[in-house]
Length: 91
Image (cartoon, rainbow, N blue to C red; front, side):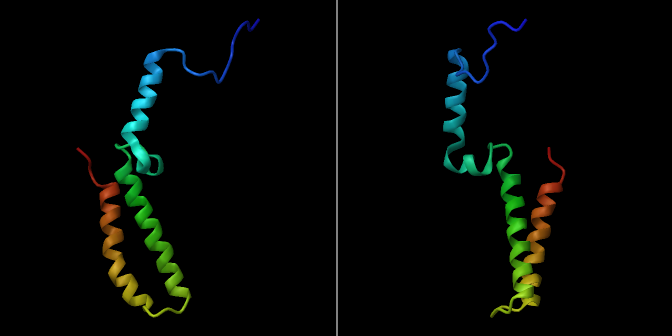
C-alpha cells in the first residue's frame, strides 16, 4: 500500500535549501536563542519578566545586602512596562 515514502530526507529542491540557509543567516547567533526576528522582542521581554520575578523571589527569601522592598519598588515598574509591551495593542 505505502510504496516509496521516505521520511526525514534532506530537501532536494534547491529553493528549500536556499531558504533554509537564508533563515539561518538572518537569525544569527542570538536568533537561535531568542527566535525569529518577528518574535524576538516578545521573547526578550518575557525572559526579562521571568528573570526579574525569579530574582525577586530569591531576594525576598534569602537575606541579601539589598532589601526586598527596595528591589520590588525598583523592578515592579520594569515588569509592568515589559508586560504592557507584551500585551499592548500592536499595529
